[in-house]
Length: 451
Image (cartoon, rainbow, N blue to C red; front, side, top):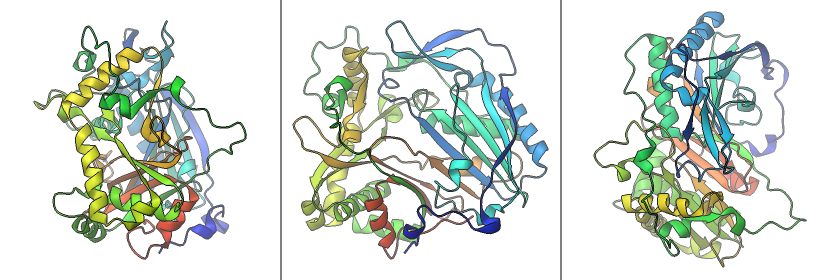
């Protein structure tokens, strides 16, 4: 059982309080000049709202702080030559849609210190009190970086990027290339920005009504507006440790043929039913489409968004009566339906028929047309987070996690591999306080993380 609930708004006492002081800020530009040009966003980029995603890496020892920051900046300048979209800006085109201006403006890079606390004492399980000060708020451009040095010699490297430009898979590619450049080792395969890989059919189908894409996404103009008197959604952020044994136990209970992610999602869905016993509960899963669109591996180096978000809605009473295996079977059914090349092709065409109107995933709304209100959550796998490869020259991180405190009403849960290895997970949670309370009352599964 995790004892966080009573300290949701508590502050650190005495020397354990995190006080982060910015000491230096500059903009790192690509090491070679770039001819300014516009790179259109693909139709699968256009289904993303303007939201930023954070990720951070904790290092027990990073040597001299100034030297470490210099190494990071020099390597960043070099790798931005190849990953030049991250040094650009998102602007509006003539139709009012976002597109990427590859201007070479650079990446804002901040150096900071947290001399009043040692890294091992930071309560990373409570991101609102800790991680919020270690991951930068992006003020301009596509990406920003903050390096925070601790009195113990440890350091945290935090990054924030615009989700409209790339997904986590793409940003992981960048992180590996950045770290390899800092170490002076060979950089993996260069990224591809070839939008032809996700081009719509020409002409696009005249009717897409009734397709799976039409069931999973909706034009923003068709989303009901919340009542003027409705209170804004409340959410809290947590980071948990989940032991490999607990992951294995969930998978075993979910029945044969179920993946770890499907089993975990089913368990989380049932927890929602306990937290909101009088509601319908919507659960979605982010599905990466690279291998589905190009089974030959042509999209492996593709940099951008290649995702869809299938979901299911079940009443809380029914969920509570269902065995975990039955819930997992339902998750598997709607995930498998969307995990096809045909669906991604139709989704690209569906977006084309809606442009320039923006669209949104129904999973974030928790409802489809004609359905009542439901509490909603989306699970996104972070299992490709390359923890062991983000070594800038001073060793592997002791801890790492994504950080996504987005302003939407739906919950967002992201499991990823623990830096400790052994099959353990780190799970980032952005969800309603009611769900967090249920999660933390469990005797197993969700535990406080440690560095």
